[in-house]
Length: 326
Image 1 (cartoon, helix red, strand yellow):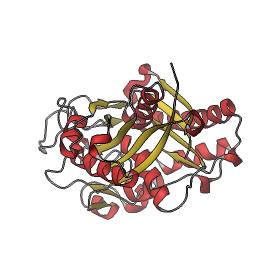
Image 2 (cartoon, rainbow, N blue to C red; image 1 turned 90 degrees about the horizontal axis):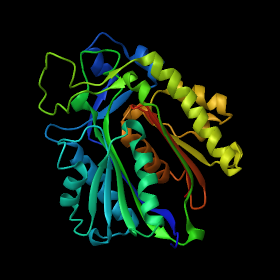
Image 3 (tube, rainbow, N blue to C red; image 1 turned 180 degrees about the vertical axis):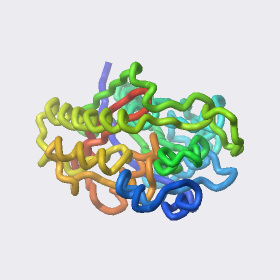
Image 4 (cartoon, one colour; image 1 turned 135 degrees about the vertical axis):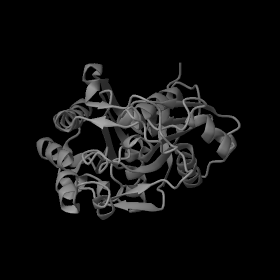
């Protein structure tokens, strides 16, 4: 079997126009802008318009990534969507996207690993490319978390936003391989820290139970997330022989600014090497890493040849990292 390289050739993202600010939340629950900023670093987040669903966001981000890659719909062999907020259990969000973008030659599947979903998908899809199964793939992280957020719960409703980010992956030579190292993990015994029991609630119903809403045990999540981010960074560097000085940018899951600051200190990574947009978009779960990666590209913070470390951790519990030569 000939093993090929796999590289990123396109990036894109889409954020809904509606902004939900901390000031807006002050009128909805017992909270303040200062309280939210001190505990999360979030100032505002984007919310999907009425009738706008996860696959709509995903398709718009995917179209941007394909445009950036100069790739036509017929060239996509596979589309994968990482999400916890698909509008239907089946058809998958990926099937909806396949239809909306006219990806006539593409297989399609969803992957559910919560906030780690995009990195899980990137590892799996790049493996298919490297072993010769496919040549070009569209990978999307997309969420309409507003459909599963309890806006009467002051501890959780401040966290979540909607959005989508996308990457086009393509086969290359072994020398062109952009995926240098990856690590995936899970601890199902800790699954109770973050839970979504039932399906999404796009219709805005008010169920008697909280099954339609995300529930979080914040203190446990904080301890888990800090340690896991430190472990992922240290493991990626140790296994590849690189040092913090070699990494151009760390693109973490946008979970909580205090978590990111604590993990950076323990990992000897300067905060200026972490790409942060949680202040503007909140926690967008599986969408947060690709949205941040696309923003970093647009701002010129990464260039061809740079080492970029992607790290994420979330419900499941799950975690993953991917060291990329951009």
